[in-house]
Amino acid sequence: MIHDLRALQLYCDLVETRSFSLTAERNFITQSAVSQRIRTLEKELNRSLIERSSGQRGILVTPAGETLYEGAKELLQRSSELIERLQEIGQEVAGIVRVVTVYSVGLHALPKRLKPFLAQYPKINVHLEYSQTSRVVQEVLSGKVDVGIIACPTPRQGLTLYPFEEDEMALICAPEHPLAKRSEVALAELSGLPFIAFDAHIPTRRLIDEKLRQAEADVEIITTFDNIETIKNLVEIGSGISILPLQSTKREANEKALKVVPLRAEDAFTRPTGLLVKQTNLRSAVRAFVSAMSQDRH
Image (cartoon, rainbow, N blue to C red; front, side, top):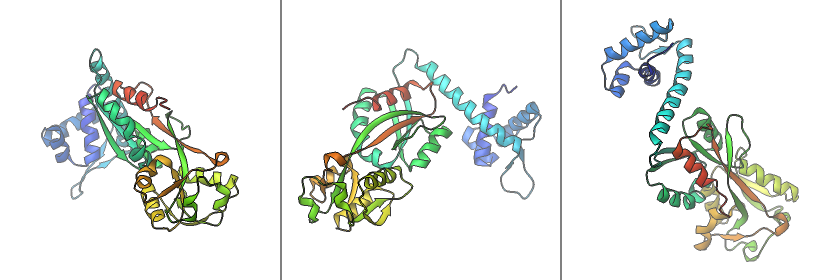
């Protein structure tokens, strides 16, 4: 049985840095102290965890060492969360909430909820990063982040899904485009028009494609991108039309750089967004964040 969590932390640091000297610096101890704790850990487990030979840079992790690393990381995280929850009892909600989000939600939908949340919980620090959907899911599953925010979420094994909000979708075009004078447009009317789309792997692209297919609208996709900002820039200069979340176009519409045309009622649709979390027994700061972000504010 392993009795020393400190030794496990040193071992995980060694695996990640592949260096006794860097591990020692990270933990403010000597290299010989690191080496001694690792040897004691190997003796306790009766397993060789690392391999090192003269002339070889860094260390090699044995299969047993890899297994220990994976389990130790989870154990250390659970221990840290337990200590934090104990410290939170009777105290003001505080701590770091690590969030990774897709760009379209993080740039346009999240700020309006994040600002009042931070005002309500001044001792919570939200660490925000941006990434693609697949990486968001991976980082939540791995425990690197507390919360992931994605568009068009689907239930995933090992994760809990909370609804965030529904984004109204709308047609965008250049101000001089013939459709710019319309008060609304049917999807079927877009057939044959040059269309700037999301990349095929992006969930929002699949949602839009399905709506166009249902309306029998055969648009001419001239190029694809993985982010909304590039799509808007090309639409502005008249390269084509697109369909985007309405709130992501408000600044350009106000500046009259883009024209936003609502879809006809029978063609109107929204893009769902959601929060993904791994643990059910969340720290109080994470619970507060999820509760605030998933509230129905409509």
